[in-house]
Image 1 (cartoon, helix red, strand yellow):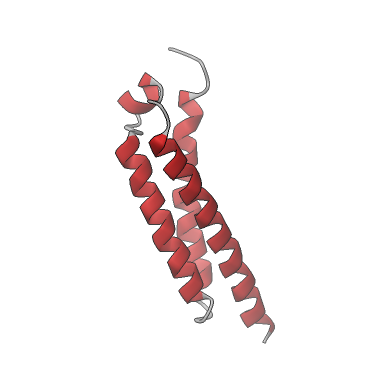
Image 2: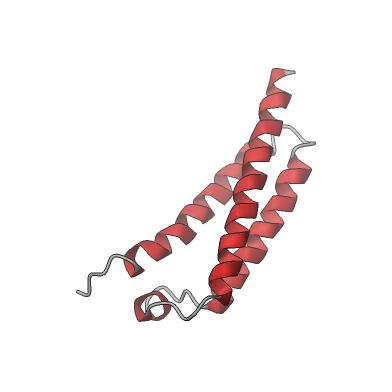
Length: 100
């Protein structure tokens, strides 16, 4: 019974993360153009931000569905966390201010 409760908590954490990331990605897609490094090297354009927002929304729905199926939440959260880290790291170099 405790494992089911932990899965629901993880599903809630995943849903909150995906909703927050979808909002950030949507706002970034509507913002002014990014740096030339972000667009030229990492290809972080309006389209890529919209795609990540859609992907985050799909994962959010997946987390809501996974709260009913124990055992599906942890792998889903692991995959989404990896994608979120990769998305967030694409901003790191663009905002560092170094031009080597």
